[in-house]
Image (cartoon, rainbow, N blue to C red; front, side, top):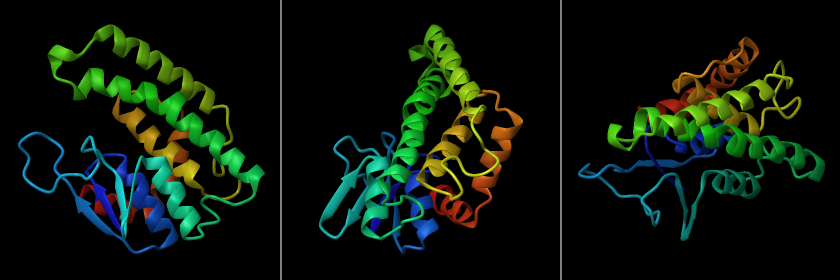
Length: 198
């Protein structure tokens, strides 16, 4: 199995999932920026991550992570019981739509886009929306894992987005900081970070 990756990108989530279940893989770093030498992503828009499993190719981070869990029986990360899946899916949806969307927009309009393309008003709205999501998340139980007693895909996605929120200059409550630290302190996370960003 190959995973096409790029440092400090969503590909970390896929590698983290694979590390959690102990699945062997090959990480292939691609060239994303114009003029950057190296292998190009097989994604139609040259994005990452992309999974290559024999003749099978799959894009989109959540789809890849769910595929890995389904194919390789990662029942703890993504259980087969409908009610347990529903809770995890609820938090995955929150992580991607309510938190990641405004955080990503904020990062683009404060750090990633060329200065001439940044719009201060967009950044302000994105920051307010992201902070509202963080306040809502602070009301959840984070002294355990977000979907219950077990560490799941929801924790991987949520912790990664919290790290992006922090990188964007947003304020995390102490419980959220502690939760994020517990997630990233996992050995599988450390291995994935080293592979993805090293």
